[in-house]
Image (tube, rainbow, N blue to C red):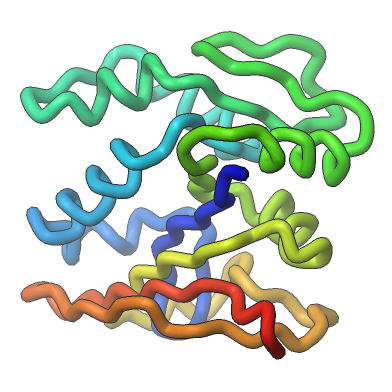
Length: 181
C-alpha cells in the first residue's frame, strides 16, 4: 500500500497560497529535504491549479542534481473536474476523486507526493487519505491567502516524526496521522 505524503510551504500564520514569500528562506537544507521526499516517491498527486503551474514551468528546467529530471519523468495524477486532457507524464483522475485516489493508494509501490493543491488536500483530509504531512514553516506572516487547514475540518491527531530547524529559520515539521486516536 502506498502512502500519500503532503509537502507544503507555510507562513507562520498558516498561508500556503502564492508562496513567493518563501524565496528569501530557501537554502540547501530545504532543497535536500525536498529532494529526498521527491526521490522517495513514485508519483505526484496534484490538483488542477498546481498541475497547470508546474506543467508550464518544469518541462524546461534542468539541474545537475537530477531533481528536474525526476519531476519531469515521474507519473503525475491530476484531480480536476474541468480539465479534459493533461500532458507532462500526467493522468487525469476522472469520476469520484476519493475512490480513484483510494485505488491508487491501495496499489503497491512508493509514495504519492502532493505539492500545493490546497483544494485536493482538503478532500483527502476529510477522508483520512493523507498519511504524512511535511510542513516547512517560514518565519514570515503573510496576512492573507488560502490556508492549509480550513475551518470546518474535523479534529485529527498526529504523531511528530521529525523536526528540523534550518539555518534560514524555517522549521520543518514531519507528522504522520495518528490512527490510534
